[in-house]
Amino acid sequence: MPKQPQTPQKYIAIGRFHKYKGLYQLRIGLFDDGIESSVKSLKAFGSVSALKEKDDCLQELLSYLVKLSKSLELKHIMKLKEAYE
Image (cartoon, rainbow, N blue to C red; front, side):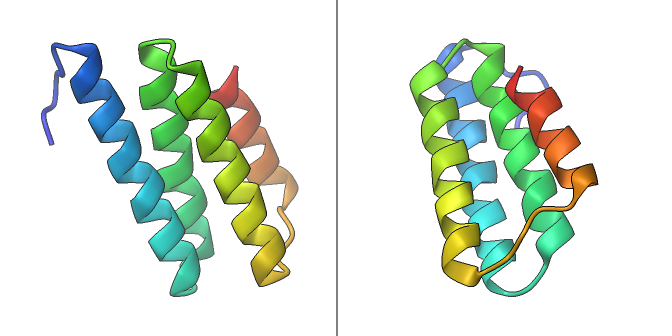
């Protein structure tokens, strides 16, 4: 992963990577790591104002949590809120 992405496409690619990584981590039971990867994804998308990707990422995350019957703790909600804004 590039430390300093130079183009919007690279930010979007990084965001997608972290989105899928987060969903995988949730699937294997690494809940905190999965949320953290999702936060990184939202931040990457936000860096280039990729609003549709941000919305899709958050929607997929929440849908997946419902599917797993998992609830978010306050600390996770605060991290997601901060990253989404």
